Image 1 (cartoon, rainbow, N blue to C red):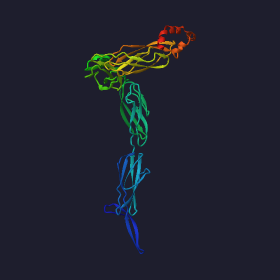
Image 2: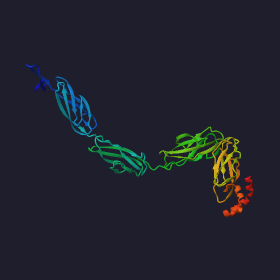
Image 3: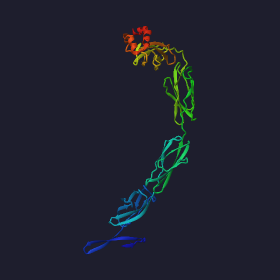
Image 4: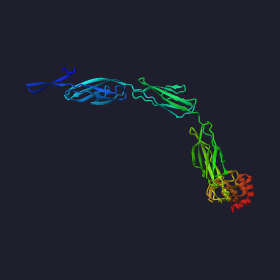
Length: 439
């Protein structure tokens, strides 16, 4: 039954018959609830959170239940609810309310969910390509409510591609604007632009050279400006790291300087200093120069004493032998040894404190002769470059197990076995020397 109210609106009633007694029946009327709701935002896109707010009321009671049907097979309960649509389209939202007398009312409203556009993005590798280097482009675009169905790349040099992940090479250096335009399955598009810098092939700096003081210079003053020359084949600007100290692998004392000079002061007298320059171009590529050295001014330097050589006089070919070299320096300087072995091989030891025994090993390789008499030499040099006199040592190198075997074997048998008259000549010519060495 419907009646008009004083505002001109119609109200709906439901008749309820209540029997207080079997002979007394009264009729009561319940007014139906009024369903209504609002939602925001009013322009909805896929994945966006939508707030649904019931504005329903009951003129003569209270609403105790709200049932929502969002039109996409999802439901919710409550006076205020939220929902997200996973697809675009037109959806009929229904709200049904129930009052405390179990009376219900429903309302429907149309909700339009728009397509969310895709978001274009990409990366590329390498970050700083050079001319004619292959650049790999990677699509990183997304579409939250569908799929991307086309890609259009503009590489900024007159070349294009419709691949998702293309590759490209640039034939000239420069800065290029790369544009990617994508289209999703609903026809919406998005674009993104990024700049890409293509560099020419970079060459490392030339090796630092022309040092001052010159390498191995002596009597260098104690306050001095080190200088050097260096250039870059690409004419790139250069910076330098300076390594300096009194050890053969000097530490870095300056970095990223722009001048090809470095001032050092208060150096020690009669001391060897080492220095090295590392040149860097503006692409992060470096070239290390050689390690130079010089000796500062000071009292005269005395050379080491002549070294003593300790080791066997007679050795067998293709066996390793140990020799000890020892010298002292009147100034207490460190010493190294230059050794020749008489077979075109040479060794140079590290520096050691004065009067320290130094061990070097050597193996004489097989030759066509059964016996060789070779001259070893040893020279001591201090760390300021002063050298001792050279000491000689004669060594007999044989292919026999011992020289006694050579003399216990008849010469004629040796000659006949080897068919070489040189053996007899060697043994005869050096017979007296061999006798001395055998004692």
